[in-house]
Image (cartoon, rainbow, N blue to C red; front, side, top):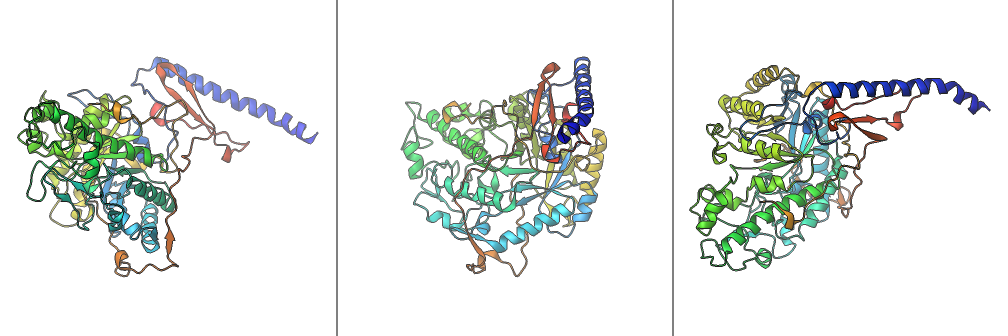
Length: 550
């Protein structure tokens, strides 16, 4: 009887709450019908709790020769590297996030062993950065493979047509593990990625991937061991998969060998890109930044190279882009995950050809922004400079961010800001203030903070195309965190007390939005109403709307 009386007392407040919500939704419907605006094709991924997440899914209209900046959001300013000594000053000038690199070799210096000293150091660094108000963009460092991974089998290195083996010889970030053709080795990466998210959590503003040297999406270097025009598909496993085994660049191709080889070669790197996306989605649901390096292969350049049987005389081969495999158009067209962020590692490239009608002359950021805008749905774009940048490079990068609608940039790198030789922290701060003012919006700090990302509603299909459906990289050496003198990981003896067995990788459930419903609105807009039942209070009813659609 008491429960019946309680329900009767609550009936009127509940009815009033429901009517208020319906009235507010109706108001938005009317506004949508009367107000012209750019319309998203996809629903929001929940309210989001990070500045970066809010920017990641902003919609843009990008034309081939004009990529207007998105005026609805402030820019997202990041910095690569962290010595821990300048956090207050960096935060004060408007830097929102730090790009922090993990090292696979330091995390797991021996097969089956996690170094708990390294784990403790990295946790303390993450805690210090978050306490200072920074978000963290994580680079997992799969390209910095431990030496023990090369003991796995006899096909762990890339080999070029000259018979040279690409050997990083223990140097950091070399990307010398043959993950493109040796699929067995990918199981080690899957385990490592799962381990780091179990160990450090998933509260990262973004995660960077690429998997080649310096963390970029690329084959090894085009010039190596005294040779040029190096194509890295001549190890035993690659040749077993090649459509033209035994054929080498520069040889005659009466049966179209050059074309068949190049198409397969570029598709293999694209398939590696898609594998990385699929694998990391087992554990991480937030923005995934793919690092696209160099100038990139442009329209018509593949045909130029094929005409001379890939002999190295064409412009794309002379510049190294063809053998590096940096086919932006192919790689971006293959992406089916709308949370992928296109990331240029050469934001400060010359822009003197950006007004040309010829895409071969466009700067990398313009070409990437064009491809990202033409993608369905369109993808967001981010970038970084190449390093050792003076104020002119900083100003150029800022102009390109505005001109092509980027979310922002990550400046490479922290120690150079304080070296006295390159652009300073004060210069970066002035650029941030000036660009934010021009955009008439506050930068990242005014947005909500990072939390657990939410997945799209169930009716948003996300699939990975097979290699047969493939269409036609910043990483550059992120600063390794400075380790205390007493914690040199590689030389520390690992004891039973501090070592933890690496668990077998298992798929982790990706968090989903709680009690989320989507209403189809005028112009195919989406209204996301989220009622978080874990914090339900009869005295309060929280209505949370995606700010990008208001």
